[in-house]
Length: 194
Image (cartoon, helix red, strand yellow):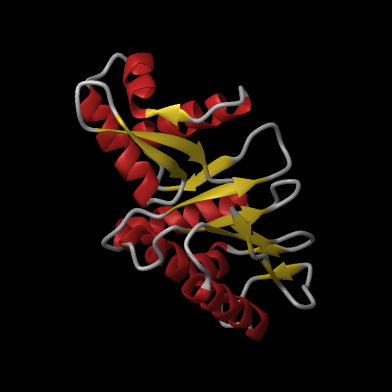
């Protein structure tokens, strides 16, 4: 997995105006990297040492996460690096509002330096459970499968497959390998985006 970081050139401690030149420049760099990166690229967006208002998060993250969720940036993922978690609440509010106003749900993996990444935005229970299950499997040293997810939550394989498809379309889990499954079909090996 390739990583291409994006960050403010010379960050201010606080951004409240979504039209601030720094916010607009960072947004354009993020969109450019997202557009030009090869499949299999994680784009960490560093917010270290700065706080953004919800409107700034909407301006910065909304277009990039829409590209991911709509399939315009296949195999490319945006992850926010926010040591200390100074921005997750405002980003969550911004992404929930954009999701309510727009055609797609917007969710972002958010690293605060804690034990595990957070998911911010319009996160439903199925996406959260799927991410947590896949993350926990990776922490134990292996990728997860849709069948294991189905067994863990007592659901049919098709329901688990639907959950995985949704989480993958939102850019929070990814397939690292597909294998033939016993009894037919395909078994996907999944890891969390982080």
